[in-house]
Image 1 (cartoon, rainbow over the protein chains, first blue to last red):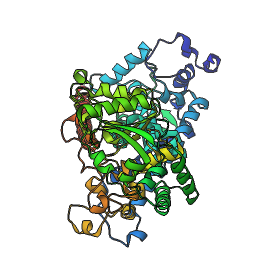
Image 2: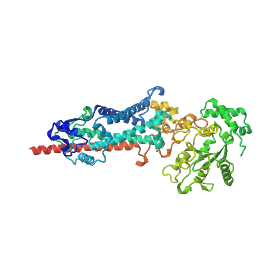
Image 3: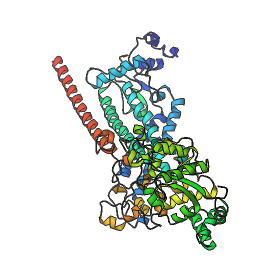
Image 4: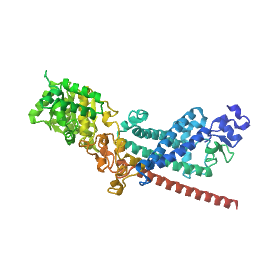
Amino acid sequence: MSDQVTSAPSADPSDAPQVLTGDATAEDLGSLRRRTSVYVYEAPVRLWHWINAAAILVLCITGWFIGSPPPSMQIAEATHQFVFGYIRFAHFAAGMILTVGFFGRMYWALVGNHHSKQLFMLPLWDKHWWSEVFFELRWYLFMESEPKKYVGHNPLAQAAMFIAMTLGLPFMILTGFALYSEGAGQGSFYDTMFGWVLTWVGNSQAVHSLHHIGMWVIVLFMIVHIYLAIREDIMSRQSMVSTMISGHRSFKDDRPD
Amino acid sequence: MSQIETFYDVMRRQGITRRSFMKYCSLTAAALGLSPSFVPKIAHAMETKPRTPVIWVHGLECTCCSESFIRSAHPLAKDVVLSMISLDYDDTLMAAAGHAAEAAFEETIQKYKGNYILAVEGNPPLNEDGMFCISGGKPFVEKLKHAAKDAKAVISWGACASYGCVQAAKPNPTQATPVHKVITDKPIIKVPGCPPIAEVMTGVITYMLTFDRMPELDRQGRPAMFYGQRIHDKCYRRPHFDAGQFVEAWDDENARKGYCLYKMGCKGPTTYNACSTMRWNDGVSFPIQSGHGCIGCSEDGFWDQGSFYDRVTDLTQFGVEANADKIGLTAAGAVGAGVAAHAAITALKAAQKKTQSTKEEA
């Protein structure tokens, strides 16, 4: 691997000092010295990101209306009017898409590049990772004058994504399909797969409450995620928003750390 | 004990004609959702099988299950009690009282060891060694365990026996405990509801007599034929739910039109019971038909699911009158304000840095 980066004589990563560069591989470090852009997010990851974002948006809006329905409408006789039915349909359809997308994303973590795995594993045992978490926290609290360069997610973002997405989405999928199984009926596929959640929690009303709380955790994540992506696009030393469109992380300076 | 009368014998002795008997069998088959081919099977079972002895005990409860039971129309509770089962002990229904009643209790257990059905109405409180419910001079939990020891099967009548109901609602000072958590070595059939529908109660008993086995149970141990679907699934107001037409306030125009009660906190979508199909009082009506939402009385812990009139229920963990959405909105507001403040500080800091660097250059 190291012979690929020998083009830059002083850039042998093995004797480079340990620097705060997130999950950069030796290959990335070499690349950092030679060019100012690294291909981080492969097409399936980017596609998943935007489909997931769209699905979550639809799910939050329709989910809110399912809990607190819009004012009654008198368009036609009930037989010919399906307003609430369509809202629920949109919620279920988006939920199905999100689920399929999440399985696709998990698959890509297995076959995709190094960075595609970052979402699914927190290196909690790694002291260096923790020091980067606290460094990033200090940067957000205005206690550091200059941020570090990160090829993949910065460690703090990685932790937030792990909680809201890697743990949050399966939680929402599980509780969501459990509630869906009530409509699908006992003995249905969904009931066989997810009905136990209702029995385990005890009361379907309580599962509804859990599903609501899950949504709010994701909404909070969304607010912070969008704000920080834009802020870091301006303030940090690397590209943020465009990286999730092109897949390339470009850097604003050539300094190695 | 060698000659226990069959159901048919008893019915004939009471002057019931064969014709009425057959009518009764077909009504029972219909109530159980069985095809007409089962009518002769039911009749045959009634003619040949000895009556099943039943011991019916009462723990912490309000007797609403018994009240419901005696109003059963198909089959009539009278038929069940006098003809179908041999209700050998039920302290609220039997003529005997005091020592005579307790003697009948012991006698039934001895006589029909391993063959009787134990029907439990209410539940045992376990706190203070069970002293919160005394029956026959002893804690009810002892009586329950004693009767369950030699029972063939246990029926948990109502929300009390099945889940705990109001006496087990938080903070549950008496530690009222549902039957299946006290009796763990017997097949238990839960018939929840506060009370259960009369025809469901008699239907369960009839099924067990006819087929000599427990009806098919769902994951929670309820008979699937009565608790397999939600009130919501068979609600006659369902088209208004799908249309998005709701009662917005009690006694508004939509309420008069009979729109869906979802916004008024109806628990039909989360409650498994047969109310919307079998209805109450010989099929006259059920809560939603009377214009009030379902309160979810046949669900586990329904007293602890917030108000009967909220769709999004309160979470007591976060103080009174805070539901998931209120908490979420507050948190989102706080985070949003935090983001705005953070952005403002960022801008200020950036401007400060800029002025400093221009000063240094100058």
